Image (cartoon, rainbow, N blue to C red; front, side, top):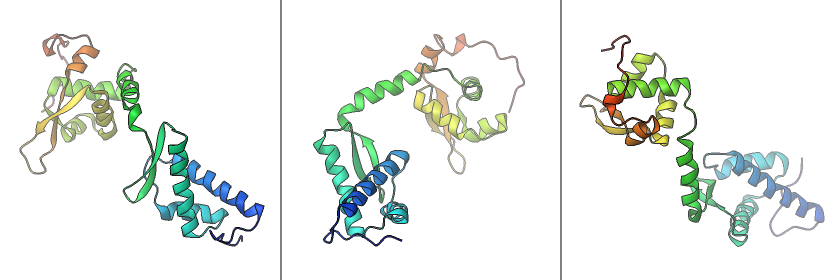
Length: 193
């Protein structure tokens, strides 16, 4: 097993190369993670290959942060929620919003179309009510439809737990070329209570 590298005791070219490799490993971990990575998790992984003292590891993370700022990268390394995460720089928000706004025109999956139809015909409706009709969890699909702006939260049901009520949006009408809900095809299927 390799010895731990100390910030003040870097003596060889090999130790410098190891630090460079640790820095690259940290970057790879950050790029691969969609959630904040804790310092302890980063240390656990890097120590498996290249043991580095915590102070040195912290310095490498700070160097990565500074490198991105100096290079004026489109992303930055932030420390949030007891961890580190790569995020897009604020100045690029309009472009990223455009990316996701265009996502609304992508084809809907069969499951998403099914949930959307249930909401359109039964609104306002809660997630548990949707799931009772479908018979499967709809959490991810509802989140996707919210992100696309096709549905929105329209209130809370006045029962214990106060579940969110969902309804369709103007973007839903626009997406399907409808003037209003009266333009929806008449529903001839099984009625659910």
